[in-house]
Length: 165
Image (cartoon, rainbow, N blue to C red):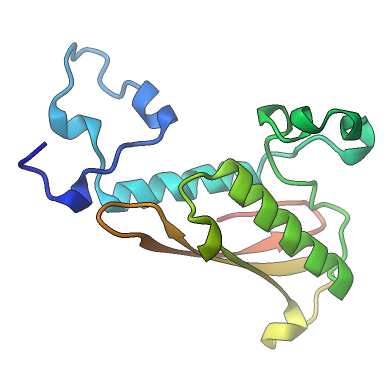
């Protein structure tokens, strides 16, 4: 890999490494085993999108007795956003849950850099809608030779639970 710049030496995530986009080709070249920074960030965004749109098991399903199961891929995903209200106390709890879930399931985020902010409509000057919140994510992603900035924002519909990143 001496001919590749350090910024281009990012290894794809496990899913991307296991996915064969060219099954007819028997041997991959060196350049196919690494990804560019933009493709790396696209993969992170895709995986976060999947995380947000996967509903994890509910707390009342008895996982409190099994802390290791609760913190495993068995419980992959976010809480069900449907039915929540955009009240201040629930918003802060939602921020904390999103923060914890992202740090647990997205290892490419540098822990100390993650900032999760959820806003109600009236906090950003929009027409008040108790069934919608705005989400903003900012973090540094692990990259070589130095971390890369990552920023995403979206709307979470609290009636349907939809989150389109």
